[in-house]
Image 1 (spheres, helix red, strand yellow):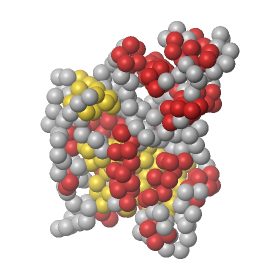
Image 2 (image 1 turned 60 degrees about the horizontal axis):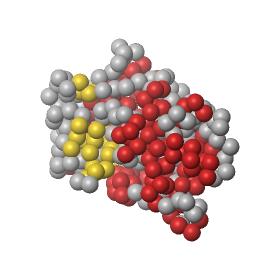
Image 3 (image 1 turned 180 degrees about the horizontal axis):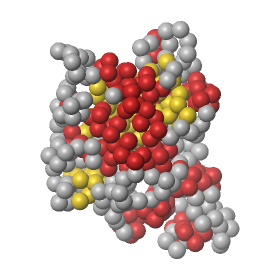
Image 4 (image 1 turned 90 degrees about the vertical axis):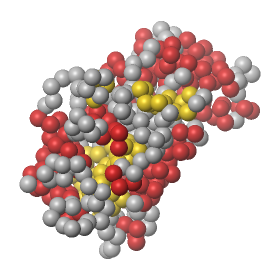
Length: 383
């Protein structure tokens, strides 16, 4: 099937335009590390973010150096590869869960200090590698640091078309309802969606994040305590986010830049990669049921730039909830947009949805290429 044309036909099929009524249809986008990369080449891919040259981590990573020395690593000149990073996080996770395997000089507190330092190092590295999209307090909007390219404008136009009807007025409760699930820590999707709206109707004001913050330090009109189902979109970060902080009074969303000392004392809620992911933190326990319910209630799933790696076993299991059984997949569609060839995409999907491609089973439509090219073709087919 032609992926962009089929997606456009589903949008038209479920659109409110020209109909007295239309059923609410959830279109959920699942965004991997390739999505921000497709938006701006300056964003790092996953492995790049978790690799540290010695001179990158050593000046600030004092607790990490002590932890590595205690565990018999030759620390001087040590470059931390992505595989070594996962091994370090795995050891920390096991020591948190099983006190019996801890060294005689390790306890809950100093293990937490090392883990917090790792998270602070990740935030600092990302800040030095990727563009920053701060909130302009006067406009109450995320701002881009450069003029948008043609490809970026195309992506904006696609989401704008999904968030509003064909005439450009505010979306109605009936018809297409876009939602967003992401494995990324950054605020790329927030910035994109926020710039799809006019000056008086911030997207984030009508977005449910799976948790409700007591405070939102990213603009003056961002916090909504209770959402109306008819008008709400979901934005759920399954691996946490650089802006999500837990305080004694609850969660806060804070997109402002923090220094390294502050980050070590209270790092954001982010899941570090490991050989065995530990999702026991309260934030993740709260988010997962929200993601699963959204997948159950979605008709269309669009996977963008996510390679479905084996180590993301729990995330793969969560994705499976979109169509756990063949009968669940009937009348549901997965669009997969990735740089991998179509056959590889189908192979990846089949390892999660074994019934895909079967009669009356889940329909999977791959697309090899950039997300911006796919978005452009969708818009052309929407007319």
